[in-house]
Length: 217
Image (tube, rainbow, N blue to C red; front, top):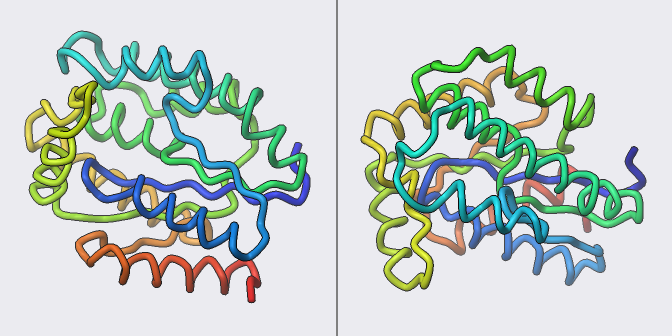
């Protein structure tokens, strides 16, 4: 399924700075001569952009955890077949702002386990198979700080992607706990960074880790 490319995913709750750090890492890799594809979930493809509008805008309660999971996996299947796997097979590195760990964190932990975790695993097996990221970077922050950051960022956005920010603080606390539990179960794939640090310090830490992990000089 995969050529010489690497698949690196960024995970975390709202306002952790994923979009900023993933772009900075892409710039660093480009300077190293690494061909890089920058993408996101949901919304990494044309169809995905339509699904993103459904999933991240509007009333927080317009659908339940099961409906959300099905839509996220529809987006993910298209994303993998149309963009991620072709790029990896061409030897490119793919950096994705969110992947399947977000589905487990949001739809399972965030909703306080109102969907069977086995269902999420079955959906993963159907859409993705046994494929996994080469590295997952988890940016961790206190949910109160993250939500404050996210709401401030949204002030300059034409389309307000605030559906998840509209949920109760308990949802976001469950979300953070979920991400940390997921990471603890796969320490060989995950690395956790403190997202409360300034942008440049955090970027340097990420670059150093990625460089050491994959032998970049």
